[in-house]
Length: 267
Image 1 (cartoon, rainbow, N blue to C red):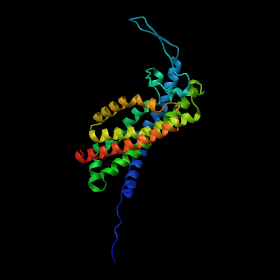
Image 2: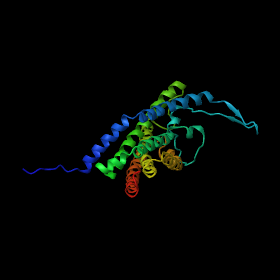
Image 3: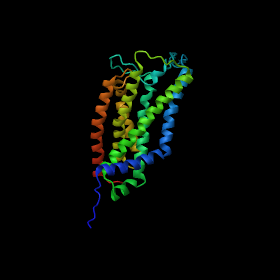
Image 4: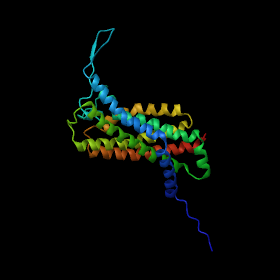
């Protein structure tokens, strides 16, 4: 009687690899620590800035007085309403908001992926069964899930922090649907940023410091683009643009990550 061997297809390999990665992520203290930071951060920001709102700081050398301005409503920590002008503001509301999460996500991705190289997991993995394209796709999906969870945690923390700080929830220049579109657009952008951070991690391998430097450098270059692409008054068009950009760039950067793994040593 002939023996039929089941073909090990890409779908089956990816399902197996993804199951391992998701299980490792959800059982890792790192994920819950980063999610907790994401939840607590907006609460602290909103409460502290509300306490300092209106305070006057004086420069001892010039005598110039600066009035501290906090958030006027809760939604400012989620985004700013676009007025059609691509001006860049450097005040506290434009810097200390949900867009900071893309730096927090970079820390998680670099540690999560870098740990595979430091522990020798990748070398054993590729030697035994898995292919490098499976690894890149699985890591991209896993890190996207983690990043999206952190964005949502920040949003929940913002609602709690706004209530604690006594800030108004009234929307000005936007609607509830716009806020949903804004949040969804930011979540979709996670796919692009996490792919970049994965590329930095597979390039740096065990060198966590190097992957973080690359990730932070790229993140700083792209940071000012986030509020332009995902304003508080985002529409379905912004979501479609972020979806298309995420799909195109994630695939392209994913191929780059696979090329790096193919052409470099795994240690």
